[in-house]
Length: 437
Image (tube, rainbow, N blue to C red):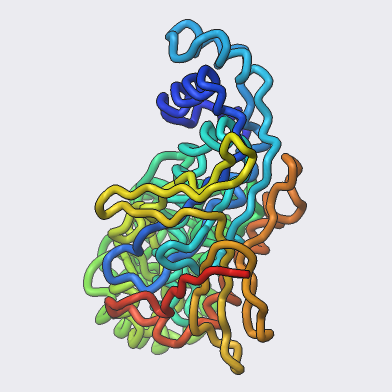
């Protein structure tokens, strides 16, 4: 979980807006903000919500310390009136949203914040930075899992991104179905399964490949994974089998033509009596490379760079917009941006997933007002995470990750089969806008 205050993970203009609204007397107007994506990345059929648990963890620590207030004062970011407000800041509103791990589509109200304008405003940048990063990773990871079928995927991208992003990426990947991660910090924070054995440097450290393999087996056991492509792959496989025997857990291939190489390595292992030794492949895999390996005798995939960069879509392009506020008469009015190509829909939303008699999703139903009467096949998508500043249990930490992982499995299972295809296309189900009761 977050170990430091999150309040300055924000943009300068959030606090200048706060200052101006305090001076105009509008800062405490009850308001409704909504986070959503206007569109999916080009050709993608669905997105995956991730980061909600991290947002909820962060909001618990969204306080302004004396040191932070001193920085804001010394740099004259805001005036004394605003500093006095921030000194006592604690979120006291309501937060609703899609469960982490849920599938989303264009204009899905992924997160809804109901509070004063001031409280919702200062959270904007933090909410979007987490949602955009984590949802991009989870969406890419879900496609990789679809391509992998029943074969497990290992997240191993820590060295390809910033250190905190690496932890977040590991968390998002496992929510979307990855089996394990190489990142120990992610394992400690969120109860994730961690794995790892040795790199090429370990092979090069020793006087021979045989010496390196024997040292690893002696230390980690015969069921370890030996990296066999530091020198010659065939020699590496033979030496690995000699060092570990028939109990050798796996060999890892990290270069070359992985499809062809996996085939003859499988044959060689079988000929040497190691029918139960697995083959793990790495080397800049993405969902398309994983799909191309479907016919190869591969047992697991290790994925790094492409995963932690969203496999071509490094952001979910989510935005955070004011959709409703009270006027001077105390009545809520719908508000919306009308700029060309950036039109939003005003009003507090509801969201439903319409299912057929077989439990398969047919439509995303989004509307304003109270949801229409259900025929029994509508699944409500919005959950109440924070009520009057109090976080509901079960959404953060290791428990939250486990819950999100199951939600993703269930959401994917109710999607039409075409959701698992890698071909470019329109969203897998349409979105229907309606007015409620």
